[in-house]
Length: 81
Image (cartoon, rainbow, N blue to C red; front, side, top):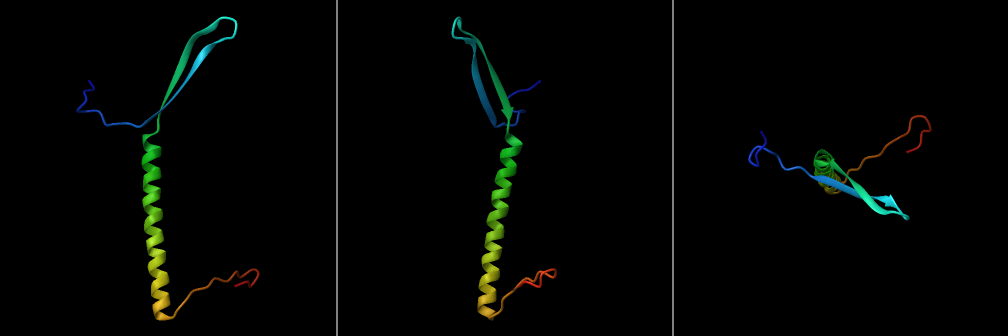
């Protein structure tokens, strides 16, 4: 049995449309509930990961600047740097 204390909150996307035609008007409708909780949590996790990556990149750039170092990449197929 589900009670409020045993059910985890969920994030739902709700879409609704009327059913009917111009001649008879609206005769009903349908509603679709989509559980987007996991998608939302994954997006929040990705945002946090991106923020951490940006901080790390900023720290690396600061460290390279202070040490008067740098980095580069070379494409071994084209020898382009």
